[in-house]
Structures are given as structure tokens and as C-alpha cells.
Image 1 (cartoon, rainbow, N blue to C red):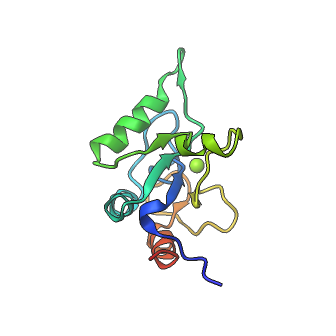
Image 2: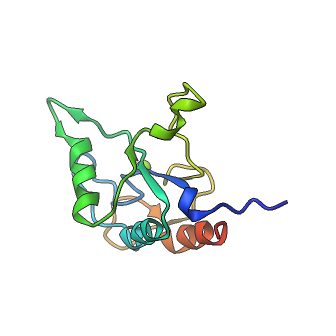
Length: 137
Ligand SMILES: [Mg+2]
């Protein structure tokens, strides 16, 4: 059986804090090594990236979600969606955004690294990026 998926029809849901930047919530932490590079690479392969984060725009705290979206835009990462996959409305009413892959530092089994100066461990993109690429064609 072949579980390989086509990059151009692939949805990749990506967490923000601890995955794309170090945990400094509500601030934007240091860039996680190779996160942006891999997201741009997925973009170039035609994959659809969905930001999948607990951040939201809160009156008292500020536009925390918007800041994350802007961070990705400023780093030339194109988002297909933010906490939602518009394409799934025809086959489900589930509020969970559909993804072929979910990249999240809190996910069980997600490879982590702890770069010097980082507050908490973060996603090991060298492993995660290669894994997704190897599961694609
Ligand atoms: Mg996280």
C-alpha cells in the first residue's frame, strides 16, 4: 500500500509557539532553526499551509494571532488558512482543521531540539522537514 501524498494537494497544519518561534508567548520568540526555510520549501512544492495555533486576537493582550500571521507573511510564507481548512466544508462540519500533517512541538513523538538561549525545546525541522518530504512525491 502506498501512503505517499502529492505535495500539490497536501495540507500541512503548523503550530506557532515552540514550532516556528521559541516559546515567548505573548511575545514572538526567536526563530526556530530552519522552520521558515522548510515552510517556504513546502510552499514551493505546492503544499497548502495552515497556521494551527492557540493564539488569538485578545483586546487586553493585543493582536497576538495577527502578529503571528504577519510574522509568516514578512518571512514570505504563504498561508492557505488560519486555524481552518476552507476546503473541508463540503465533506464535514468538524471544527478541526483537516491536515495531512500536523507539526506541533506538543505532539507526542515530535522530534525536538533545545537550541542555546531558547526558553523551551522546539521542533527539530531538520527531521520533520525531511520526514514530510520523504512521505511525499
Ligand atoms: Mg506550541
